[in-house]
Length: 72
Image (tube, rainbow, N blue to C red):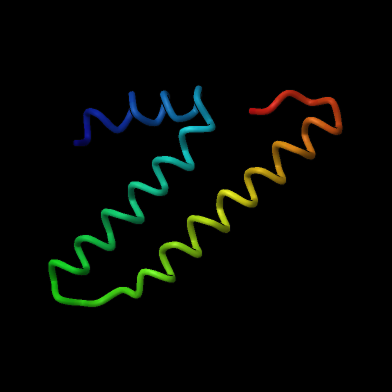
């Protein structure tokens, strides 16, 4: 895992849009680990976090387009 962290970090740096997808995967993975340890995480929290992230990203893309900047 340590020898893959450098190339993965470089890839995410080059492709910023994928960082939100990676965050979703980490969120889902953490929820699955919690469920495996019999700790219940309400699904509403997960869905809200994902919806909020998508909404913020959409606002960010819209503002960048209005200001004439290219998205990340």
